[in-house]
Length: 256
Figure 1 (cartoon, rainbow, N blue to C red):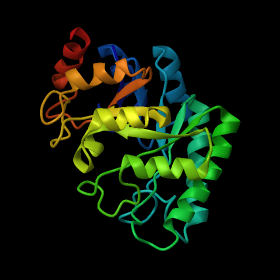
Figure 2 (cartoon, helix red, strand yellow):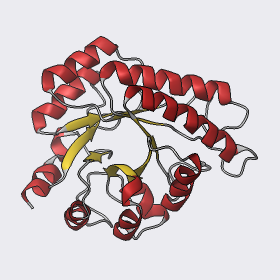
Figure 3 (cartoon, rainbow, N blue to C red):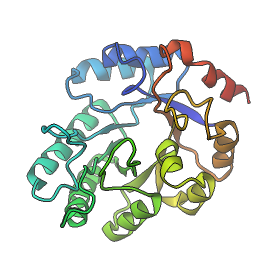
């Protein structure tokens, strides 16, 4: 049975991060993850994690300071900003005991030098990850939600990992994004199993609770489990109403 992580970038967003961590524990999540925690006091976050016993699986690098930024690592000419964001993420992540940093590429699809910038910045991130015993994640997104995003497609992520050649670098396998761009989720997961560091779920096309839409998670998640995936499954969805009101899916999948 999968172990579920609450993505606090979308769940309990009206609370401080420490209180959202406590809410995730209250309803029975086994871990937490978040997007951009940098305005939250490190000590308060660390205390909430210690109090609940929940691991913090990962955080994102900052989107960037400019309107329209959605990551910096594949933005040629902005390498200094990208490295600063990576340094910040690993410093904050290490301070709260996070196990991974998602290095956001940015909206640079088709730009000259984007691939080279991304791979050089990922080398830098992997050096930091090795020093902290952490993982670097890269996540292919879809162009409906993130038009122009550099990284699209699981196979493209796998090719980047092969070129970078670092064991710290893994794929964030987001079922929502991958279903929209490619489909064939189980076979793609199976083909790239060794490179997958984390899994995330949401309904398609709504991005709501994972109990509606195109993806039969009650079938897919046990199939992924049977392939030997023993990591967490991140619930990264936008609740239809309040977070607590929509948690019926969690009990349902645990009892399936």
